[in-house]
Image (cartoon, rainbow, N blue to C red; front, top):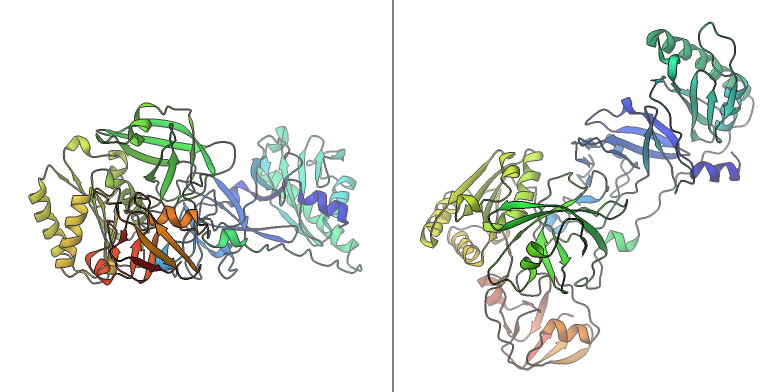
Length: 575
């Protein structure tokens, strides 16, 4: 295959499978111009064409498990999401949360004439608009693809008992046979091809007879093509292109992303998800799919007026065509929830961050207990949907003040192990948490808690008193209700950067360090998420966050730079 033809072929659409080849919960292996492809249909009928390898050890994804929403590599359990091919789970990764931008290589997809078409590079043409007809059995041929095309033009297959028809090329690898249909030659490799035919119009009548007839006709063409090339030296196979994953996609960025909002989304739909809770469906702007998130992920959302707020994703596994968030209207709102309730309308475009996860779901425990309070249901609902889909044992306990306050009832109704607890006062809530966490066997079990700060504080105390291991209790605060004292002045020493800085009253460590050109990642910037946590080498921190537990505070070897300060004149930080 000449260089010019090879270049054109890489930028052209080719059929790589019949639609009937894509059986639900199965992965079809294809090949085009030497490149192996994993082709699969998700439960939402989206067809994926990906590079046929897991990014971990290069194991073929054509032998992966298709659960209808994700592919799971059978070697080490890496998971990749429908539509985006984003890696959603790495079992051996600390906290089980992969770098959020690791993504497999994907190819464009079209369906036409009962076949699945793709291109290896940005296509310069469009696949032919073929009428639905009878898709013939594919005929593999060990011959140069360009020679197979020439043979089809020279000896076009005819209908039974019909005179030889005329044929014409429609591009480099497609032949139209008058009164019969189209025949596309899939260039598998330099010396291998697959003839894929579609009979259109009246030619599709008499299905069984036609299938047998054209199977025989294409078999004879294969024999001619292979006989003509029998004595010729075989061309060199086309090398597949396995491009390494770029460094910025294979690891978390070193720089801060506290104001990095690279994605634009359109508000597709809004609805009342519960009393005072507005549900929002955010779709992509343009054709590019949205980056995938994992259970527990949240988005930074830029709101009218310049505010940036964080909202947890409610998405179920495989729900990658849009983001779903829930926003509770709070009486003491600084403008974030009011803006999303009163100013943002369907059709508006918002800027959002990549999904980021400070609350990752582990999936290596035998049992998972989810405890939600109020709007804290949002990240735990995403977790419950994932655990339900993967048939992992879980129980979701949802505390709400009133029945009307139960949010996302439609999603809850589709889950199998949900318990709602309505109308408890603080003392009754404490008693219920003591009963729930005190009676649960801790072995190979984990707890996730999200809700109002007083409920989280109580749940953490109850879990500690009940003997739960610290690493088995996970929590997420939506906000820090403590009053922050910023009146002190103190010095910080950045050990790795070899810098001495003064933190002035009214300024945080985080702001001071950033102004000096040293980057610390952050998210909530109110001491609730743990993103800006740094190690303390010397000095005594003044903890004003809600993220660290009592033991971690007493140890004094780490702190949250967004709100915490110093009880000593100097702090030495591992920065």
